[in-house]
Image 1 (tube, rainbow, N blue to C red):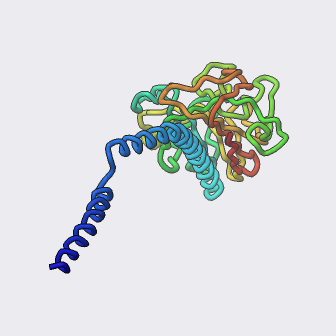
Image 2: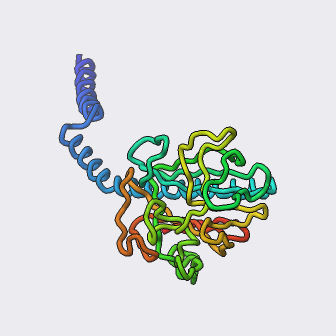
Image 3: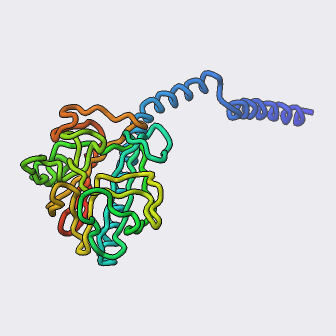
Length: 287
């Protein structure tokens, strides 16, 4: 009897602490859950802005490398086929879907690469449109949403950072605007390049199809791979620059200073692509 009673008492003692532990391990109290949720909420408030900013930087960087790839494709085609190739730049309204004919605006960069079928510089006797029946499309049309080509303050030429990048050539009549692309739909003098003596359409072919885009801002690569901007003389430039900034649809960020001039500065993530005129090499400067 005594042994049975002792075993029963020991069993009762063992069962009570095990029950308490099991009850504690089964879940959290309401107060503990609220504390955990509060901590997660605070962390999200602190982390989300940093993640959003990083995504913005990646988007602009991706756009920069996409443009770099298009330029390299055009140069490679011109050299490999001993012909002339042109890269056209057009900025359309990024708040709406693409239309035919295209609606000029801000927020969506459209790029097209074409080349001469017969290997000659097929401008004809005067200025104006390049005959679309004499052109071949090189690759697909490239559209990049939520970007804009601004005119940045030129680099100081003293280093390899964004602000100290190589300086552009300055012309007597147009300043730096025959050596860069920016504000494609603006009016002179706040657009680059200034003049548009030649242009080409998309699509091309025989017979000449209806044009969706007319590209009036062109970069040409000759059979040696040298690049030239369509301007008043098409002369060889030591450096050609393309500015790039992220937009929100068709909304372009306001510059900190110098809007629409060669001294514009912007806050946030900006990129300048520079193409060397002779070698055709492309470099990307980020800030």
